[in-house]
Amino acid sequence: MSTKKTKKKSQWHDIWRQLKKNKLAVISLFVLIALILIAILAPVLAPYSYKTQDVVNANAGSSAEHLLGTDKLGRDILSRLLYGSRASLIMGFSAIAIGAIIGIAIGAISGYFGGWTDNIIMRLLDIYQAIPMLLLCIALAAVLGPSLRNAIIALGVGMVPGYARMMRASVMTVRGKEFVESAKSKNCSTVRIILKHIIPNAIGPMIVQITMGVGSCILSGAALSFIGLGVQAPTAEWGAMISDARASLRQYPTQALYPGLCVMISVLACNLLGDGLRDALDPRLRN
Amino acid sequence: MENKYLLQIKDLAVEYHTDEDTVYAVNNISLELRKGEALGLVGETGAGKTTVAKSILGILPKVQSEITSGEILFEGENLLALSEKKMQKIRGNKIAMIFQDPMTALNPIETVGFQITEAIRQHNKISKYEGQQRACEMLEMVGIPRERYNEYPHQFSGGMKQRVVIAMALACNPELLLADEPTTALDVTIQAQVLEMMRTLREQMNTSVILITHDFGVVADFCESVAVTYAGEIVEKGSVDRIFNNAQHPYTQGLFGSLPSLDSKERRLKPIKGLMPDPTKVQKGCVFCDRCPHATEQCAAVKPAPVETEPGHFVKCSLVKGAEQ
Picture 1 (cartoon, rainbow over the protein chains, first blue to last red):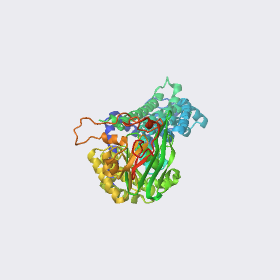
Picture 2 (picture 1 turned 135 degrees about the vertical axis):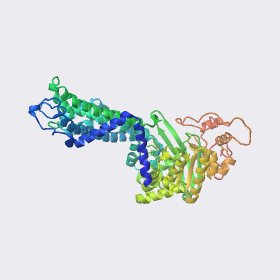
Picture 3 (picture 1 turned 90 degrees about the vertical axis):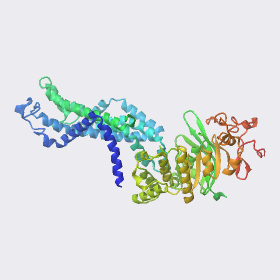
Picture 4 (picture 1 turned 135 degrees about the horizontal axis):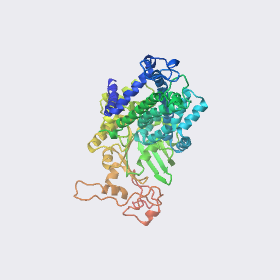
């Protein structure tokens, strides 16, 4: 069985080799890994706790004590940014996980069975998609009550239709392939055919979209927090920090600028990595 | 008499429904296959050959297709009337199918070994390890070293892939093998290898085969009997010997006529003129009458019944001797 490992590895090697050619994608990958490490190691890295208030030093600028200054309650902005990466990344990744898993399941069923099943599911999704995604998230988060968990659910549910559609299209191209018929003639059950033969073959294009979706989820998550429907104080979150700094934007623009930069960098990293992955995974773009 | 045949198809008719039309893909085909026999199902693209094979296995697309009449008796049981549960015991186990295009008949992201093991484990309650051992044996049987168990289809050449597909089909020792143009996608030398291998395996396992092809050379090489299909009907059937030496249906004669010969110095091939009839229209008379050089008015009006011109040699033509009662 030792051959198995080398073969599987070589497949990933191939993708990695392609990805390496794209410098931006590699940098993005490292930025993302760094972000994840920061989120995990926040208590170690942060000089202060995210909720320690130093009221005397409120609204301070950069100094040796507070590298990026403090906010209106005197909390260290750098520490809050480091802690804030947790909420943002959790939001981004879990929301995408919910959206992608449900979307892939619906899309696979719809695409594989076709006919009436497909028609009904797609019309329902049409109605669903007629509501702007962010509005839907806001409505859901408002109904469920503002909290990190509910924001994740709202975002995840909002992502479903896009993934379902894409998966459906992808499944439909795989469905007609001969190996699916061959699996039928081998007497594989429908569930097995979908899980083992259809989804793994149809999921390729989804990987790119999922990577990019993480970025948009972080962004939407920040937006939800900005309007007060996401993470609640005193927990640090980038969107909520921007929201807090809004009142004093003219006097202390850096208080909003730093979390804004964090959102931008993480979203950009996700999108550039997604772009790079698309090139690496698409055999037609290889040379 | 019933048990004389392993497989007996009686009056099978299959239709495909699309949004606009109904396609009459198979029209009242009857076939018999003895145990251990190899039957060549010959015909043009679109003559309904593959549909017959898929009907036997019960894997026609459910939404679009409909079997409108007929019986498929396998070991005396009507497959069309069987419950899905009973059918599952037969599909892949007693009847297996080899697909036309080895390039797409294997799942590109699973190892070939896994796919053979999957076929075996669908029907035999054995451990994963035993399944793998058995799959390795199958690979060796078709001439692929067992070390390649963990390789992916793209690491194999076309001929090798077809061997894997054959190994997969034979994994459960089926009684009946439906080979749907197993050599069409391969070049001639590989074709010969694959046929040779299938022949050996057939002798070893005593499997009956329905070989679907449009290549008479392959049929002559591999089969004992032939059924010539045209527009969803069998126009002539009999032993290879009789059909090849004494083709009586004008269509079969036309097919043989259009084969190039090594002896004569003809510069052009002699194709059959015209095209296959529109499969969405029901033919009132003989299906071949539009293209038949001998067609009469009666041909267009009355559908000919099969006539036994020699023992075991059936021809569906009004013009052969014995057709006029």
